[in-house]
Amino acid sequence: MCRKLYEFTGASKGIGAAIAKAFAQEGSKVVVNYASSKEAADKVVKSILDNGGIAIAIQGDVSVEADIIRLFEETKKAFGTLDILVNNAAYQGFASIEQVTVESFHQHFNVNVLGAILTIQASLKLFGDKGGNIINISSGASKMPLPAASLYSSTKAALDAITIALSKELGVKNIRINSILPGATETEGATNAGVTKGSEYETLFISKTPLGRRGQPEDIAKAAVFLASDEASWITGEQISVSGGMYGF
Image (cartoon, rainbow, N blue to C red; front, side, top):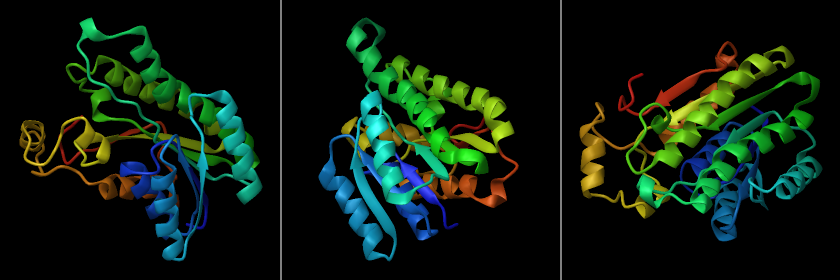
C-alpha cells in the first residue's frame, strides 16, 4: 500500500490498535494517536517497529481543537503528507434516559461526532490535490440502536450521516469516505462495559450472530485495509457492516 495512516483516539488498544498494525504491515507509515494511555500507545508503536514498520505515537484529545491542530502539525513534521485518515475515536456509556446528563451528552458527542469533524477538517489540508481516503469507525448500533445507549447509538447514526454527506461533498476532490459498522467485537472497551467471556451479554450477542462468535479487532482491520486500497476505488459514502451477520442491513 505504501501510504501514510493517521490513526486517532483508540489506536492504543482494541480495534484501533489492530487497524494501525494492519496498515503498517501493508507498508503505511503510522501515527498512533492516544488520549491518555501513553503506555498502551507506545506498546503498539513498538510492535510495529519490531516488525519492520514505521510508527510514532502522539497524544491528543480529538474533541479539543487545539489538540487536533498540534496533532496534525506534528504528523506533518514527521511524514509531510496524509493519504488515509481513520477515525476510531469513541466514547461509550450506558445509561437509561432518566440517567442521561448534560455532561454525558457532551462526552459522547464531543468525541464521537465533533472529534470526527475536527479531524476530517484538518486532514483536508494535508490531502491536497491528490485526494485521500477517510474511514470512520461507526457501529451497528447506528442502525439498530441499543437500549440504555441512546447517546452512543445516536452519535454513531450522526457519524454515518456525516459519511454520506461528505462523500457527496468531497468526491469532486478525489476523496473517498466510508463507515465501518462493527458488530459485537471482543475489545478492552467491551470488557470494561461488562461484556466478558461467558457473560450473559456475550451469550446474547453470540446468539444473534449467524457466524456464532464475537468479532476480533483483526476482523475490522481487514475491512479497513480493503477500503483504503485501490481495490475499493469505486466505493464511497457506504456503511459497511462487519458484524458476522449480526447486523444484516
